Amino acid sequence: MNEPGQRFREVALALSVGVVLADSSIVTLALPEILADFGGTVVGVSWVLTAFNLALALAILPMARVARIRPRAGWALGVAIFVGSSAVCGVATDEWTLIPARILQAVGGALTIACAIELLARMMGSHERAAPLWGTAGTIGVAVGPAAGGLLTELFSWESIFLVQIPLLLLVPVVLDLRLREPEAGPEGELDLRPEAGLALLSAGLTGALFLLVILLTEGWGLSPLGAAATVSMIPAATYAARFLIDRAGPPKSAALAGGLAAAGGLAALAFLPGASWALTLQPQLLIGIGLALALPVLTLAAVGGRDPVGSRASSTIAARHAGIVVGIIALAPILSAELESNRVAAQDATTALILDAALPPETKLSLAEELAVGIDTADGRLPDVGPSFAAVTPASGDEDAYEELEADIVDQIERGATNAFSLPFLAASAFALLALIPIARLPGASR
Amino acid sequence: MNERWIAPLVAIAASVGLIGVYLAFGGASYDPADTADPCLVREDAVLDERDVFELIALSSLDGAACELQVSREELTLALADEEATAEFAEEHSISEDDINDAVRAGLVRAVDDAAATGRISGFEETLLRAVAERAPVGPAIEALQALPGEDSAQSLLLQLSEFTELELPSLDDLPSLDELEGLVP
Image (cartoon, rainbow over the protein chains, first blue to last red):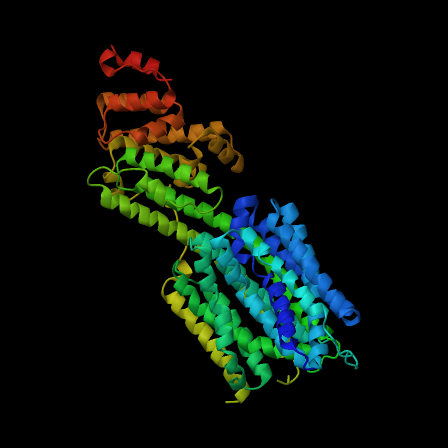
């Protein structure tokens, strides 16, 4: 089909897929801000992320059936539901509004992306031709999600993440006047659970990399959302840069095994960080990114099974990935929460010991302890910034060095506590990636 | 080597190598420092730097923490205010009286130790013993820790009056130690 504007319509459909799938990760960097606004717990606020991915995983396959019958109207309705619920998310003042709106957003999003592959297939002639554009748009969306969310949160507020999606509605008239080819004929490909399980487990591990790393960088080490966004962009950057390795990694199954091992190794390395520096996270992220570059294409192709006449196999890979994200968050959030509490106590005791044993006059220590108590209260459950507490007390003449040393030691203990709290969750995320090796090993000699 | 094993082996080598480097640089021990066992004697170098009243406060915290089988730091935070004390008591299934008894026993032992090593004597020792045996333990510990550099019974009295909201007279106004003991709650 060569009618004018076809390319523009293809881009419009791809854009809708990218925006919807970006929403699966876009709030990751906003979670600390949402937690601060709404209060509650890490586990509770993680449902802002979980609810979307769970609803998307559950809704995508039924929506693929709808897409087969009414793709154009389905897409427009999906976009309308997605945009409308995004607007509600943007004005939500508590989690009881935000989380239901996120679920509705995911249902609309599922309809949008399921219809988008169908519309693209009918415009381009086949699902096989449409799949690369559809898949690439989704991958880019998921990859840039955290960075876009971090940028918007830092420049404006977390609410702006949802409000900037409203102009997506402008694409509806562009797509509604599409002239479509007849749907492809042919039987639906048989569902193979092995690659789907591999995708789900790797996604669960990847969730660990993104969800945990973002909270560690922003809440544990005090990086700005933008700084954290730039740091975690290492994974998609590495995945993109390493895509050529797939042709040099031997048979597809070997490449997928190597990918699973590299992702598991990178996640395990994050559990053994020797310091509180964003730079130390880059090497493990590089390994995870390379791992995903090797494993995801093999698993996706094995799941879709080459030709996909009705597009439901493509949708099933989305379901598997998002189910994995949900499993990852549900499993990791309570582990992180428990580890944060035990490390908070350990860091608090270590800090108290430092103050008690400091070679400073007792009145200085008492004044400092009072200021630190105020700082902890003000932090309202988040990690306190001890700088203002130390600045509020003036050490006696001659005690300046000991005072500075005490501040550095206390900051070190807090950073140790924050970093150590993430060790066990990262190991759990690594275990998910290792478990993915089981279905990968059971793949037939997958074709590339 | 069979071609299909090369990529997985490279991935294993890269992972093990990176984890090994992180472990070599302390990755397995990057966690908060452990607190010292309150039942063990602390290093002289740490204790010698303390003024005598602060030393007694720290020593009594160690003794009480040892008896309650908690860390000195946990007990210090528990004594910070009444709410923290109540939470600590509930968490360890003990009464607030148990905590008071343990801290008082620690205070008395710390005064005994300081007297035995010759760091206090005479009026100071009598005053401290009276505080250890009769003053509310939280304010007593806080007063001992908060004393300005100069160690004097007068400072202790002033500090204690601040924490207990009692109006205690200047030492010069006290006719005898018996009267002083009567004033300490």
